[in-house]
Length: 257
Image 1: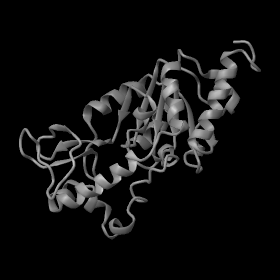
Image 2: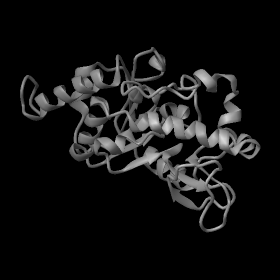
Image 3: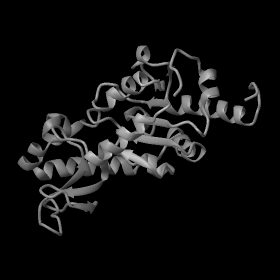
Image 4: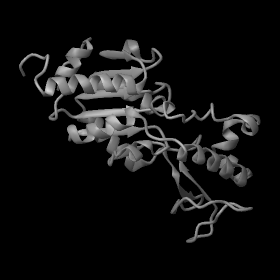
């Protein structure tokens, strides 16, 4: 395990290698560059009159399932119109360059997969899948007519396969994340707010265990809690790191390894 401490960008690039166990956590900031609004930013027009809990909770769904389903169908259409940006594409390339990289996302938009990432841990689910309310039977997306579609197996109403207010995260996903964090040598948080738990605690957890930590954000979120803070958009900073890594890997403008 590498010993943490304040470092600069070039020093971080020197520490990258295919042998390192790297964990990347992404949040809304990386998808914002693709035009995906955050949950609250998406509450515009008609949707602004509703409280978040009315649109994203089991209670809200039971009270007005068609309203909630239509809200997510509208958001999903916005996602389908978006394209992965350079930040997504670079992380997809890193999956091949760094075989021990684990990609965890708080986003539900599927843009990492659209960019080519094949092993994504979706903490909060996916807006492209449905599950039934009562038994959580999985289903591909089905458009709603005048009523919410029903599960073909049990006739329970189908709902988006995302984590709502008051719900627990998937136990299997949390176990996989826990294993990755326990082995982590380099932790990179990209475009995360640093306030939504349990993800907000990952940075402190791995740093306390000796991992090197990096935060990439347009705002100064977590700057005082990390070994390296890089301010800027996800695509801008990741492109710079990728360029630095390529130069180092080719032996250009870098000391001998």
